Structure formats: C-alpha cells, structure tokens
Amino acid sequence: MIAPPEEPKLEDTTLEPEKDTPQPATRTVPTLAGYTNLQKLKIEGFLMQQSVIILIDTGSTHNFMSSKVFAHLMLQKEDYNGDFTSSVPSSIGSMTLADWFGAKELEAEIKRMRTELESLRSQRGELEQEVGLLRSNLDGARNDRARLEGDVLSLTEAASLLEVKLKVEGQKAVATYKGSRGFESGLEKMRRVSYEFGYRVVLE
Image (cartoon, rainbow, N blue to C red; front, side, top):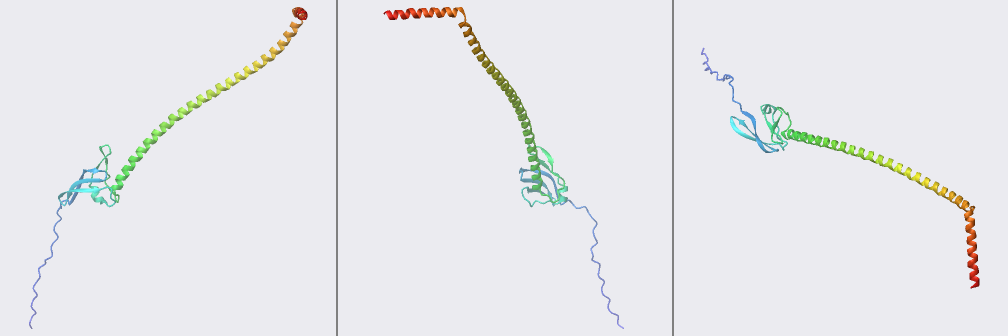
C-alpha cells in the first residue's frame, strides 16, 4: 500500500498586532492669529505635523466644525474696542462661527439700544419736570387772571354806584340852590337887566 505524499506545511503568515504606540497628533489648532475684518479669521496650527494657516469665512454658512476639534481650540475674539476679552466657547455643537459672531453683534446691538433707552427715559423725566413747572406757572397765571377780573368787576360796580349817587346828589343840590335866597336875588337881577336891555332896544 502506497502512502499518500505528505502536503508541505504552510507557515503562519498572519501578522501579529503590534503593540499600541503613541501616535503624534495629526491636528492642533491652538491659536487665533488674527483677522483682517469681522468676516475673515486666520488661525495658525499644525495638521499632520505640518504648520498650516486656516482661513475661516465667518460669513459663510458652511463653516461647521467638529466639537472634538473645537474642544482643543482656544480663541480670543478681538472686541470692537481692540481688547481681547471675549472668549469663543469651547463647544458649539452644530453652530457656525457666523452664528456665534452674529449673536455677539446682536448682544452689542441690544446693549446699545438699552443705553439709548435709558437716555430717552432720562430725557423723558426732565421733560415731565418741565411740563409740571409750566403747568404750575399756568395755574398761577389763571389765578391772577381770575383775581384781576374780580377787581375789574368790583371797580365797575363802584363806578355805577358813584354815578347814581352823583345824579341824586346833583338833583338835591339844584333843588337846594333854587330854594335859597341867593337864587331869588339872582333871578331879580336877571329880570332887571333883561328889562333895561329890552327898553333900550325899543328906544333905539
């Protein structure tokens, strides 16, 4: 009996998994380099161990960033007065940078409107005080007018009474004078003069 030939043994070529070795970071975006305007951001960092500069158009609606990438991104947003005081949040989810900066601009606009509102309220208070003062002066003028009208009415009544009194007193004075001796003597002189004047006229 012939035995079958033995098949050659195949060596195990399966690669054993290598031990985990720390891999260098493939992306690091740590700083905000600056921007030319509020719509263009320039970020310096590293990608695949290569220095890169990333330009982000904040006015675009397609600048979505991964929350994992953004967790390592620490930015300082230049405020309108030139101070780096407003920090970009560490995680914005699906929010775009345009949305975030738009919200900041909206907050600034609300703050400005509140300041204007407070100024208008202050001006309104001053105007209300002036109106109150004018109303007080107007009330005083009305009181003075009423008092003057009362004085004029009193003077008119007094003048009417004096006129009546003078009329009565005048009639009494005339009657008294007519009943006096002087009045009779005066009449006799007037008659004599009239007679003599008339007689002379006739003779002539």
